[in-house]
Amino acid sequence: MGLSHLPASPVAPSSATEEPERAPGVREHDSYLAAIMNAVVDGVITIDERGTVLSMNPAAAKLFGFAPSEVIGQNVRMLMPEPDRSRHDSYISEYLRTGTPKIIGIGRQVEGKRKDGSIFPMELGVSVVATEGRRVFVGLIHDLSQRRQFERRLQELQSNRLDLMENMAAGLAHELKQPLTAIGAYLNFARRHLNEKTLSIEKVEEMLDGANAQVFRASEIIDNLRQFIARGEAVRTLQNLNEVVRTACEFTDALAKEHHVKTSIDLEASPDAVVINKVQIQQVVVNLKRNAVEAMQNGERREMRVSTRLFGRDLIRVDVTDTGPGLPEEISGRLFEQFTTTKPHGLGVGLSISRSIIEAHKGRIWAEPNPGGGTIFSFVLPVAER
Ligand code: ADP
Image (cartoon, rainbow, N blue to C red):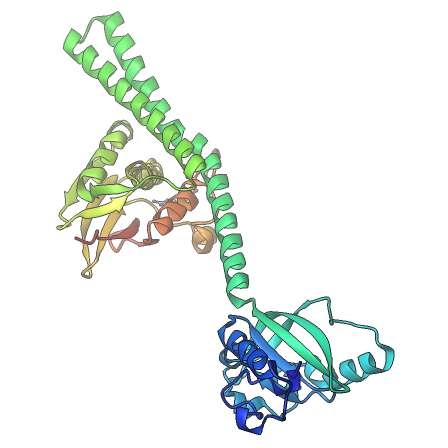
């Protein structure tokens, strides 16, 4: 087999006209071989016993960014980064001396160096072919960059998902507390008024309906978590953000009233179409509102404002503004990290969950001082494309 004459690349040194006399059939054999070399997706490079490149197929040329003519006739070490670059000659001489293969017939993951100097991971398989009294080394090169990238991405996704699940599990306790507290409050109200007979039946019915709505909300939160675990993501649908925020505000009305917080709502974003998981975004608004109420509970001024508006051309911004004491300085740098809390019974997960949710929706969440005193928590979400 005339491997040293592999006409694998258009500019390989041995063109058909230079070819020596061959037995009938050899020429076809070589042209088959050339066709195969040209067609394979993996790189193929042949070198002689001194490491000089004899041929390079188009896939290898593309992989390394060189024209074959720039490589053929040169030492193959030009395609390697250190330390292999300095050591390659001795790898060959060692093999020729001892016959002990390090890579031949084994295959290794090594690094290649492109013309532009960048380094990429590759799987290299080498076989030795004895031809016309000489040995030729055939290197098969499989680019691993995409696989590595894919593996990295997969790892990232898995750890993101674990983070998110851990976050959601920790948050479940937190999220469920709010509807459960509300249910308790509604039922207590109803019972008290039934005992004292101070309220009409209609009013009691209204409270039972309120409790019922919160039961529904709690079960939505659990469903959401179940969906997330089953599918790896929470289902998103087209929603009007103003509506979603308004409903979330209703969930916290009772809490705000209980703490004598005056709430104003100003939902003016238009358009307000977003593709979101409604329950998750409501969770964020409820978290921010509850934090605002809690921040103001010992204050003189207790005013909260919830607003939406367009932010740039393709984002909708939601602000929850309070007149509380402002952010505690000691935690301002890690506000959105898990388990950051200044509350005696705080879990410190509300803001970290909120951030995971908003970022999973390709949005951003942040906090800044309210010029009039207090804090503004804001998030933005992309407007849905028409
Ligand atoms: P938790 O409410 O359980 O403490 P969060 O992650 O929701 O957990 O909040 C973390 C911390 O951020 C709170 O303990 C509080 O110190 C601070 N914080 C959150 N919202 C506000 C706010 N509106 N005003 C002042 N501080 C806030």
